[in-house]
Length: 396
Image 1 (cartoon, rainbow, N blue to C red):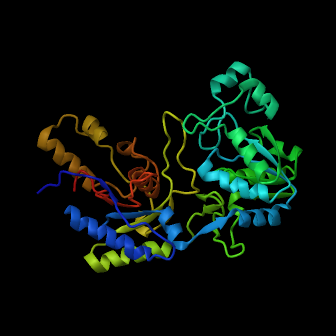
Image 2: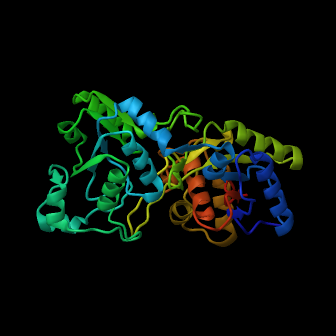
Image 3: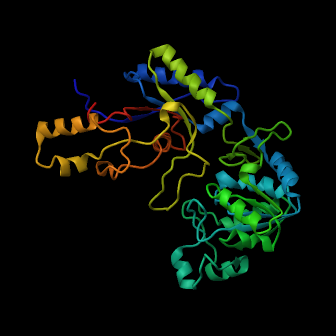
């Protein structure tokens, strides 16, 4: 019988994961239990995805603010440190900032405006226009910012991040000075030791700072790249991708986990005879149209994945074929013509008009975004996602 359903994304309930748990076994058992409970079967090329959070938790990959402070002091000198381009997030950055401030005598905090890298607003564009401010060239002191714009609370969290970050730095024992600018070179008027906290533009920012005469430049990806007093670490991403665990601890991005995805793939093959694809995913790569916040605060969507998830989609646009190549057909004849075209499609459709409008993104980014939306970030209790039929098409 012809299949009438395409892609299905299922959230899989799992036990609460603790440090040292056999995560591969838990994931496999949870998926197979769900299949038995809900009456579905696994197929070749199904995708099993685990959120990065449970992987890091199973690894015990945590760091205390004291460890962050020690690493910051060792790498940036412990005096006046310029902290530039942080995102506005209690979950993502506040605890990191606490540790950074504990490792310095003074923090010069340079905030991007009108919004941070992922879209959290400090002030609206309309307010900038009304004040005659050009964010690309104008540098504002805290006093000037308050004079022009007053207090600006985040629309979703109700937090005035300028005040919140300033208070946090003082409570950690450091002096604080706040400026608002978008040119990283501005920080060098205050200090030559800089910690740049941007995520996806960090390599360019470091290059600009070094070329402009900075004496010491680190990114968040350079802090906590090795254990400090027995802490966790992340050799590749440092503090990037970390989340608040407690008021004094962050959960770091998971360390190397390619072995994990291969282990899950092998266990499923041994148990079911099906060759599935497996990935560990972080934030999805999508933007909220109302809050204008870009979700991707992690350094990447896919932390690790099996080889079958490499590459980009190679798809034809059905509506293009229906409206152009086969515009005179209908019914079963149209269905057969389109199915035949799909079966005969080239392995690389780049430049083919019949593929225009298909999403030019990596498979891991697309599937990871689907998984992130399915699992959510709250209390759903589904940190593992099973995606079925993703690689099907109209001709299957």
